[in-house]
Structures are given as C-alpha cells and as structure tokens.
Length: 81
Image (cartoon, rainbow, N blue to C red; front, side, top):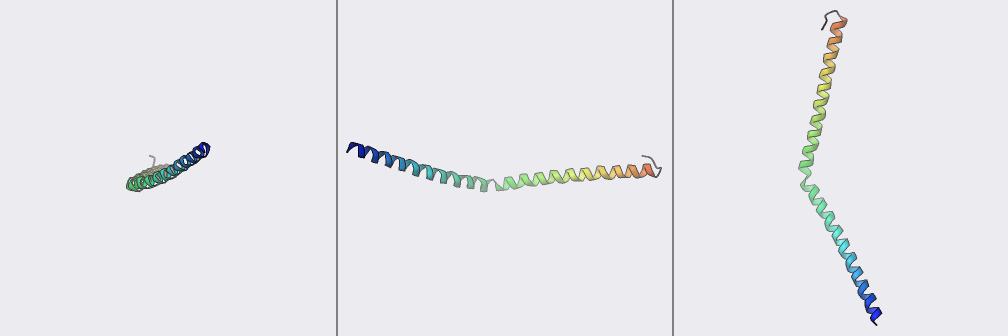
C-alpha cells in the first residue's frame, strides 16, 4: 500500500508540475503579447527614424551625384569647375 500511495503521490505531483509549467508558459506568452502591444508606438517610431535616415542618405547621394554631373559637364564644355 505504501508503494501505491508513493507512486500516486508522485504522479499527482508530476501532474501538478506539468500543469503549472503549462500555465506559466501561457502567462508568459500573454505577457509578451502585452509588452509588444504596449511598445508598438515606440517600434513604429523607430521604424520611422530608420526610413527618415534612409531618405536623407538617398537625398545626400542624389545631391552629390548631381554636383558631380554638373562638374563633369562644365569640364567637358570648357567651363571648368
């Protein structure tokens, strides 16, 4: 009888641990979802900053390219820089 109680107790303890782990994982998942939902405006702002930085880099590149083309054209037509 003692062996049956010990195995039944161990099985009950194992089932309790499994249930706690499952519920713990579910709670962590919902916590992660809430954190992501809370940080969404911040993430959108960071993405906006990345896009602005990219646009500024492209505008800077286009301006340098236009200046180079003007200098080449002036050189080819004898105007000099």
